[in-house]
Structure formats: C-alpha cells, structure tokens
Image (tube, rainbow, N blue to C red; front, side, top):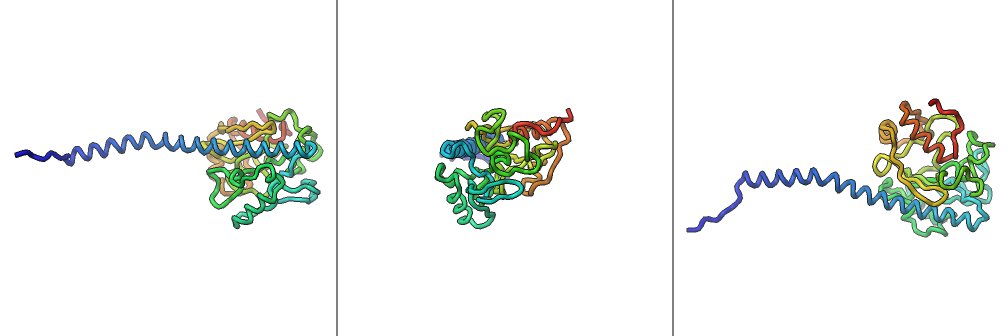
Length: 263
C-alpha cells in the first residue's frame, strides 16, 4: 500500500512565513521603482511644458507667456497683463470640464496640445492642472520686487544671471490660483514647499533642463507633508539645512536673494 504524501501544517506555516519575509523585502523596492517611474513621467511633462514655454517666446519676439493662471488681459498692482492671455485661461477646483477648457483656451496649448501633460501622475485626484509657473516669470510682480531689475521678467533676454539657473515650472501636486510664490526680501517661505516624488520637488529651468531636488532638511519635508493641503502659511525654517532649502528656491525664482542671509 502506498501512502499519499502531503504537506504538514508546520511546513505550510514555514512556507507562508518565508513568503511574508520576501514580500516585506521586495515591497519597498517595488514602491521605489514605481515612484521612480512616476517621477520620470513628471520630469518629462515639465520638459515638454518648458519646451512649449520657450517656443512661445521664440514666436513672440522673446516675450514670455503670461504665467498667472486665470489672469488674462488684466492690469493690477501686482502685474500688468494687458493683451496677454494666461498660459492656462481659467481656474477651477471643481468642474473637470471647466479645467480642461481652461487648459485648451490657454496661450500655451497651441504649443503643447496634450491635456495630460499639465498634470503630474501623482497629482491630486480630480485636478487637471498640478504644475505652476514661478512668480518671477511674467506671473505676479509683487511689491517685493517692483523696481528690482532682473527679478520679475517679461522677456527672456531679461533673465539673470542665466537661463540655466532660473526656475520656470514647479510641481506643486495640486492646482494653484495664479502662480508659485516665494519671498524675495526675507528668509521666509510664502507658498509652502511642495514635497513630491521622494522627499523633494521636480522643477524646470529657462534653458529647458529639468531636475528633481531632494530637500536637505528633515524639517522642510515634515512641514511640507503637514501642510500640503493648506494655502500659504509664511513659514520660517529653524535649521541651517532648512534655510538652504529656502535659499535654493528663492535664488531659482528671483535669481538672487533680496536680503543678507543670517549665516
């Protein structure tokens, strides 16, 4: 008589335990690989948007597209945009069709006719636009920089010190009503630092290249995560690394600091 051989309960438990250990090892690696792929897609989106941004300038006598989302053909104390259609011509946090129409009606759409490129793969659900143009790039000419040569610019030839050092687009991960703001004259954040794709942020530059910046300070990451669903809070860092993160964004936005750093 032959006896059928089967797994014992102990053997099954050992196999399950081994599988659980392997999964605990592999899952973080898979998560990192997935996030790396989404980061690459986000950088590609920013690359194409910045190419379109430069093409607009090429065909507009070097004038920059109006970077203030939803503010077409207006002249206010914080920016003269008369006869300038905004790069995205409208703002809505609710209706998807309205958002898509605003993108299609925007001044940049003839140069990048793909609505999917305006949204990060990990952007907020229900929002078609998750990228912002910096205040300085013909967006909001705040009182901080009015009269400061080379800070807020309307033409590509005005960009200082050079195109490779000045930010154009930033991945906020959600829709913003005009543009991305950071103070010029004081060591304080205005809009909160975004934390995207692995404790950093994806950005593009006026010369067309893109980068992912890893935040240096744990406090920058912590604050960004705690306030990623809130509006501007004017936060001041408390550590050297935190100030380094702030200085990097301020210099990228305005080309220089409008104050003397404390260290």
